[in-house]
Length: 238
Image (tube, rainbow, N blue to C red; front, top):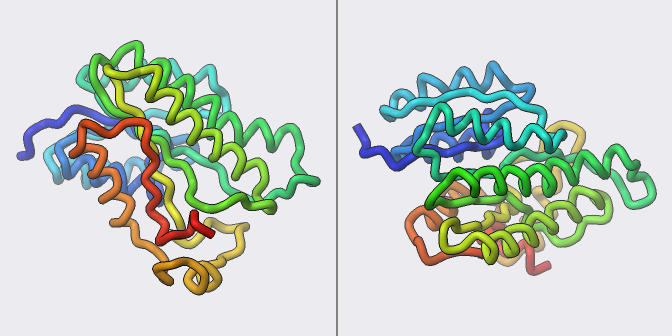
């Protein structure tokens, strides 16, 4: 059995990159407090996989489009895992809506999920954690007019990363991972993999392992805070 490394609260952790990050952390000795909203069955499927690493997974449900749920979620995670020392803000919404078409409800959805709720999750985590790490999942792509509110809110999550790192040191480190094209987009989004491969310096798309390796960098180097690690083959340079 692996030596316990603590426990991690992962928002939106049942599918896609959240799932991969949860399993990577379990493989590194972390128990997992896995948040989901509408993906309960996918979350339950991870319980035996995490157990195969000798770790425990607890499922926590919350609607993170409502920021008032943040503190309750963090407190529930600490009830299950008093040694909680890692918060991974991964929950996200992603669909195209242009500047002209953005509604107040859409604006609020993106900003609640990507900025407001992460802020209050970090705040609640900081009240309880004596020494730990926060990792925010941002986005490597240059401003995308067709995804106006999404892109702007993810940029602001990067701003939150830097400001929180300055505010919370030396107790907490706060960093971010900015993925490029790693997985095909969810339904309702165009797949621009071919265009990305043709334009970016490395001329290929990435793999899930590129993201888990980036997370490992922050786990292994305790002198990193306020940093965004772009895992994008150079996409952010366009």
